[in-house]
Every structure is written in structure tokens, then in C-alpha cells.
Image (cartoon, rainbow, N blue to C red):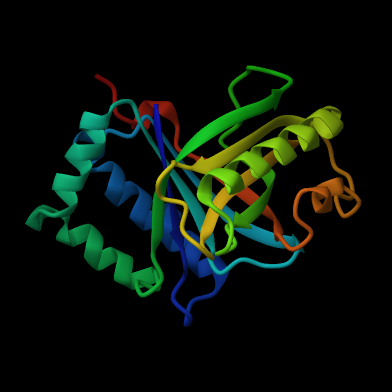
Length: 221
């Protein structure tokens, strides 16, 4: 499976609630009407709920999963076609199109207490890392992976699932988000005291609300 992330920022004249409402009630159904072109196997919107520490310059982190490179290439061709213009026009109704960031990631599963299918809406904590300009990409990736494994070993009992999304090798850009450590809480508690700072004290930790499209609405071969 290929996992792609897209960071969405709302238009400055819209509230977070209006932004989310338009995304879920208008843009998602519109995108799904072209599912033969997109061929998504999973489609998840992660809305910023509130910061635990720090902040992030976006309102939603969207995940697109496809099963093969050919499906990804098909999407790229569709985006460049006249037929895509209806989606592009809708973007302008609720997104700040001057702020775009998308890239492919490798998801590393660090801990999972259950393989049961997750509910369509749930909360997750995510820590966002940017690569310092002076650090080589391979060194940055190795440090983040090691820190994430230590975190997972220490806190696995507090979370149903812990993952690390690492921007694919060769595209680790300076001062852009390059890795995301995510943890799905097993209960309600205060996460201020978690040892996130053991990895990177400056990295923001954000509570996200995840909304996943039902499998039945996605592409099936």
C-alpha cells in the first residue's frame, strides 16, 4: 500500500466548523464521485482539535491510500485533466490554495494492542517533526525512528496503536514537516505529562479528530 499525506489549510475567512462541514458534506462526496480515477483504498481526514503543546500551520491532515504505483500515476494524470477542474474549483471555496504541502510517507507500526477495525471517527495525538537544515536526511530519519521506538516501548500501555509516518527517502526537505509520530489513546487522561519531549522538546503535539470513509464507498477491483 502507498500512503500519501496532504496538509489542508482553511480559508482565513472561514471558521474551523464551517471548514470541516464543507469538507465532509461537499468535498468528500465530490471526490468520491471520481473514485474510479482516484482508486483510494483508505481515505482519512484528521482535523486539528486542539494543541497539547505548540501549534501547526494547517487545519486538516488528509491521508490517501492506494494499492499500487499505477493507481497513483492514474491520479496524477486525472489531476492534470480538464475533468478535474470541478474539484479544483471546490478547493477554492474552503481551502487557502496558497498553502499546499503533500508527500508520500512510509508508515512504521510501532505498537498495536488490537487488530480490530477502528471506528469511523476517533481521536489521535500526533507529534510533528521538521528536519533542521544542518542535519542530513538519513541521519534525521534514523534519529526520529530510534526516538519513536523508545517512546512506543515506554508508553504502549497507554495507547491502542502507535505509528511513525516518515517522509520517503530522498524528499526530506529542510524546515518542512518530515515525520509524524501518532498515538491512539486507550482511555481519557491528561497527556501533558507524556515524555514527548524526550524525542524533540520543540516539536508540536496536537490532538486530532480522525474521520475515515467507510470501505464500501472506496475503490474495489
